[in-house]
Amino acid sequence: MRPTTDALIVIDIQNDFCPGGALAVADGDSIIPRVNALMDEFAVVVLTQDWHPADHSSFAANHPGAAPFTTVEMPYGPQVLWPAHCVQGGAGAEFHPDLRTDPADLILRKGFRTDIDSYSAFFENDHKTATGLEGYLRNRGVARLTLVGLATDYCVAWSAIDAARLGFSATVLEGACRAIDLDGSLAAARAAMRDAGVTLEP
Ligand code: VGL
Ligand code: ZN
Image (cartoon, rainbow, N blue to C red):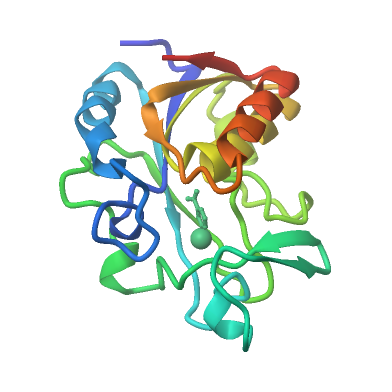
């Protein structure tokens, strides 16, 4: 067991990001056995859950005429328009049934405000509105984070970069993540993580 200063952050392993889901990440479910095993190594385990209202502004369907996977300009910056996914209370928003949830100390929901998306577990996409996760981890004396989950190039990367900027030691286990890889987004995210001081491990 690792010391209580170390936390495992499990990002968005939900039905909609797994094969058959509304925003399926190729092979997304294949990481689950390793993630489940990792939970036994950490005294602090946090799960995040993408949790959008049906009228969420990141859904292409809420932008008449806009196609999924195009980008629009929001007041807080560019935003990819996604197929509707992880709608609050829906089956797609549930954790994958094979993911262990009992070891989680905290389940953090994000993306619940209609007008703003939240890829990162720390800040919404304006990079300012806090989710409260930083305070939770600091109050518990956590200094080192290991991040896994879906998707590498969006919610995992944005969470890891924010963690490093906030002064946490941040390690992404890439083998326990899978990517969407939209227009080179995986390569860009890996470079941005390295620049931010995130450690990438297999
Ligand atoms: C995610 C796109 C939209 C993710 C969430 O979990 O990486 N990606 N919402
Ligand atoms: Zn989302």
